[in-house]
Amino acid sequence: MRGRTWLGAALVLGAQLPALWLAAAVEVHTAKEVVAVNGTNQRLKCTFSSSSPVSQDLSVTWNFQPEDLSSHEQASEIFVFYYWKEPHKPPSGRFKERVTWDGNIERNDVSIIIWNLQPSDNGTFTCQVTNRPDVYGTIGEVRLRVVQKVNFSEIHFLAVAIGSASVLMIIVVTAAIICRQRRRKARDKRMEVADTEL
Image (cartoon, rainbow, N blue to C red; front, side, top):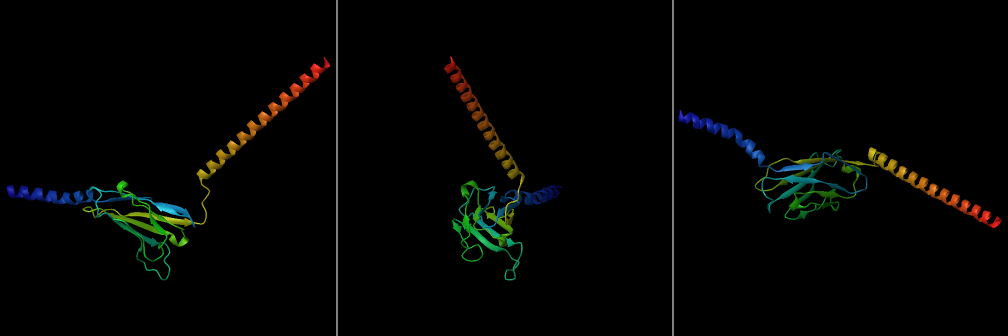
């Protein structure tokens, strides 16, 4: 009987180990989608949480999967940026001289900035973090859409409405002040004429 009890306990523990392993993994957080205007710069935010303190061996890898592959590009991901103890920019390729580190490891922020966005930058960027002993975990994905101009959104409409209302209020107040001053001058002039007639 005792052998079966130990065997049962070992099986239960063995079934729970994968759940404990996943709990010790690195979790990466990114926006699902970012929209940016052609020719501008865009920060791609990526943060992480880890069950272990940030180690000296923390590494970050950013890759890119284009939306429309040109004939000379393969279906594999394109290297964008690497961090291990210090930022490492790509020595060649489409992101050479166009990507900079904008993260803060102490704040679990491993973000980058892509400069001079182009329509060919449409696609999915991936952010992968390893923080030994946590080497497994989620990979953050952010889809970047580069547009020619910003769509007129509700926020823009609200800004225009508030701005227009403010300008209208300024005009009404200014008109009221001018009318009051003219009435006062006219009244003062009438009083002056009445005083001279006496």
